[in-house]
Image (cartoon, rainbow over all chains, first blue to last red):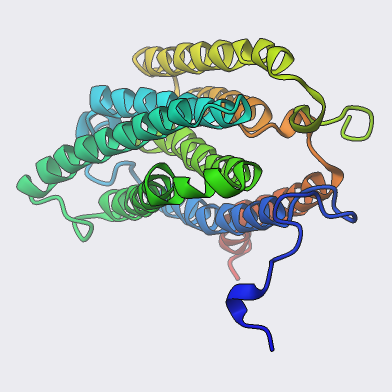
Length: 206
Length: 109
């Protein structure tokens, strides 16, 4: 009788003969495809709300006057930097340097936290002015899109922390499997960066 | 491309692999420059339709760089391209949904 723990999930390291890639990588790409639709539906709602409004933002003036463009720009740079630290963590795994990989993972986590701290200050400033999601359509879509994106950052921090911390033990028994995990979380992380690349001009500059 | 080139993961020695790292830094700098450009352009206060087209064009270039280089899409297996083509099709459809409301409005339905 076999236990669940004895069952080896096939093709986690070696490429599957049909797809040519390990199953985990196909899985993360299918997940990202669903994420495209999640953010796509909300982005589409934004287009609908915006094109239907007589003025945008609804209170008049310019979007750049009610958001903090320098902070948004800073956060964009932070996420771009976290994308390169992420890819360097994977590259360090490829070069068989676990200590270096964990350092890059830690830096990625640090940058993700910086992003969230900046977002916290942006949110609290809006709350102080009484600008909650219910204030008008701009704040409704602003908080929905940036909030969902922020949750993705939090999710990324959890997985990255696992890989940099206890999850790194896998390196001792199966370094290739660990490298694939870093690659897969990297794909997710770059996607979160990619979403922000569209959110930033849409919500801050236009 | 996916059929002719072996992915770097299986065919290269660490020395060869290191040579590829430079492109990540190039893309990193390009992304920062494009961010600066898009913010700079926003201060020009261009007419809104032009500003929207310009900002989204720059964002698309940035997203393309991230996807092609950081996510290695420039050299990927067919199955991933297949998934992404399908996704792009549905993404385009969902983005075009709001245009239905314009049609209703125009015809008065």
